[in-house]
Length: 328
Image 1 (tube, rainbow, N blue to C red):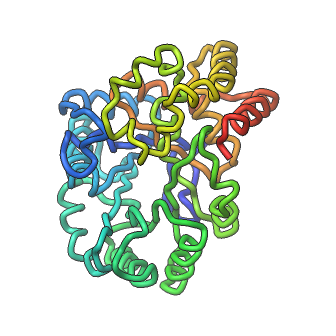
Image 2 (spheres, rainbow, N blue to C red):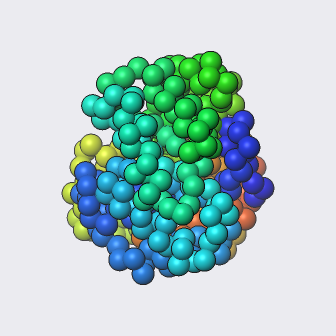
């Protein structure tokens, strides 16, 4: 697939990037989600993504309080990637913080990722003590000072996204992206106004958990006992995909998984690759995806999904079964 623009900015990215939440190394508030990976494994994952043509990586302050950012920078260094050759996206954690914390903490984000520059800086969640306008003003200052290239948000509703876009427009800048939960098992952006607003304002939607944290690979349908081996965080009802990990959820999604397998077999691919290809094709250039990987093979498969071209009939069948599984 051809490179896409990040919103209306001059930042170019591949349709599939690598999400680095799993690089949090058992630290910080997200440690209940993923088992810790050693640096050698993370090096191999990043190298595999690069070989597959992935051009960008998404991390965050919240992922181990900088641990993921440092691990990503280390892995890129071990792969001899020169600064500026790949696109790096990270996020500011705003929980109970004022907008001025953005300027206070950007130095730490830059230090953790050094020598790699920050191309996209995002507000992780809409839970700051300051207004969206104040947050966007601080973000705009970072762009003007050359510390970041573009500004995005994450988990923003259509209303908040439009508010952020208007605030940045007043600063002479575009809102580049909104990172949201999106997969064949969660297509709420189609009904909550986020997709329409993104298209109207030229904002890229970055889909996180595009494989519904592994549900769309079919491995839990093959062996439901594997659900019990997941970390507490991934099984918790606080996780959007947990409803699909129940006996009822697996039964309801079984027809979709069967279709993904049939389509995969026809293309010599995997169900995960079919799910990713559908996601970054169905919405046109508006949607890109950042699957994670805890093994190099997963990164290889995700990158190869960019070369998979589904037929119109396959896209339609998957669309129908996705809706039947309760995605909308």
